[in-house]
Image (cartoon, rainbow, N blue to C red):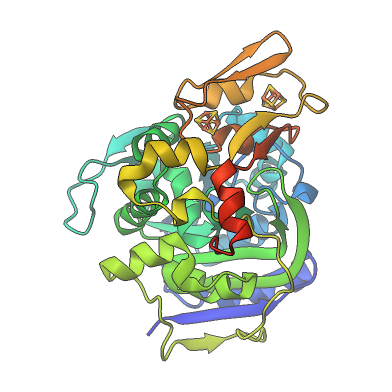
Length: 375
Ligand code: SF4
Ligand code: SF4
């Protein structure tokens, strides 16, 4: 049974973080000389107080502890669209690398993963740097997510899909959240982190992963089993584990410990804690319709992205990232082609000004009124 550790942590200071991080690293053996990828969440160029990226103080604490163990850490991720040097600088993670002499590297080389019978998608391209590392320590940020509801240990690994290939996966699976969850589990079995340490001191609720509101949770969690860690965290955030798509996919395929029966709990944070009223984006069309209704559901159920003109700065990032070619910037107006839009919400995720809003589908409003929509 895996150990799942949860600790109280109320500030990003080395005095608070270092003892926790050392205990977290003791969950797995690390040998001198190991090249360890510290896979932070570096989604976009936002300052640490926006709670979009893993806090640099946690990244620093982990790298320092790995150096003390004789390892050779390097920090890496592949942001969605913004230039990696900008993301690294604004998130404060570049400064950590400079301070400790640890490389901060964009995961920019993609290579085809070796065959793996546990995958459902046979062909999968992931970061060559990640595949070549001796070990991965994953540092997810505890956040809500408009498409997947939550992003934690399993979802953080999607950053090892290089650059715009992320958008290709979104396009390939379309509206089907279960299929996207299968992609995430495929990544997990291809690149299992030896350890995940989730940054939940300050996390995010609402319209995550890029535009939600910072929220204090006061928590650091760790496990060698990313699935078990997510299974512990989802109900704390207010989402039953069985309703969280990556955990449902993991359970169906027998990957990781979703049940946590007999899990060894460590740390001083009560795993029975339930944070009050976390604002988790509700499931929409995807929880209600069978696969053959994809097109109809898209039109009638799923929320449509739209432009908030009062906030939009016409930077064009949303149009650049749209995997379906469903969005163009025409002067000051964004023109959406909803017949092409696959509701991946990458446009929302990448907008630095929170200028993509959602209009609920007409039938969804009816389902909600009837109490049929669920979390
Ligand atoms: S318009 Fe937005 S939600 Fe629709 S496909 Fe493009 S990026 Fe995805
Ligand atoms: S909606 Fe956001 S990303 Fe798109 S053009 Fe406007 S400010 Fe830029």
